Image 1 (spheres, one colour):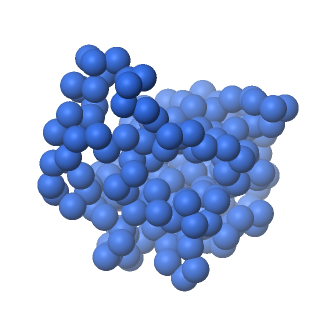
Image 2 (cartoon, rainbow, N blue to C red; image 1 turned 45 degrees about the horizontal axis):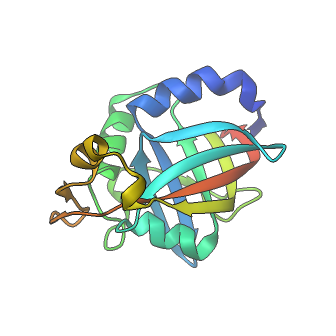
Length: 179
């Protein structure tokens, strides 16, 4: 692992976030990875944090609630395999399938956390949850509710309303490139 300075990689992280990156979790022996394109990186409470938004119905939500940690995997370059994996992991539920196997991704043990890094998507941020906040329906403007929450497909293919997000603040406890 090649340790990195997160600030030097901010442009790459934000550019790739718009296209989709992976959030990885581990609870017990169960690994999961999920595509996200909503997130933030910054400083709060004198710590570098990566903030992610996970819907309550996602398996990743269950995993983070149990483990209180996650890793972020950011591509340094987008190959066809990586693009397909990021697409697949955005529409499949990891509760009943192994997305790592399905996408030919190699999990690599984390250093400060149990959640894995991914060999093929080497820029890694290891995060420990230091705060979380539930979104509240009454605080979401109507136009955003209509666009992002009303009749949104869930990961099992059904449509649901009020599938809001939990906002997780993950302190970045380690940052590196998997070699």
